[in-house]
Length: 127
Image (cartoon, rainbow, N blue to C red; front, side, top):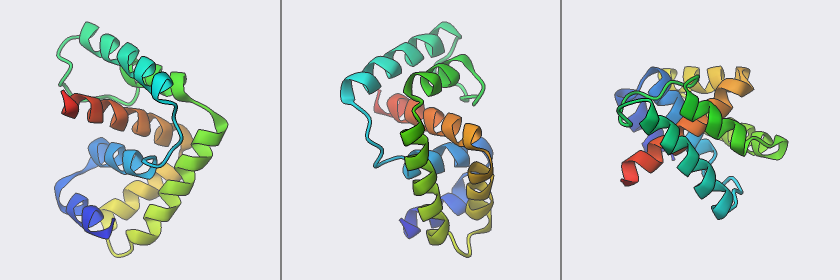
């Protein structure tokens, strides 16, 4: 994990960094495959309806907010917070990553939307 965070420190910034960190923090989250597939399919349709599906993902965009709402559960947010807290200990000495993690931990809604954006990004990368 530390090597990946070091790479992110030098290559990612802003919302892109937040989305990757939230996605990593939620990697062990318990999501049902059928639920995830359906929610991602709906989000991808919204993304495509809005134009170029490979454009920058806005955390307040329709696809991200719809996916975030579809998957939102209290226990999942707790899991995400736990993952972000764990990443914080790994990020010691990495100012950009540490600041992004602090930002996500201070704003659970932002963290949840960043996680949804990370899931969409993963889906786009798989295509």
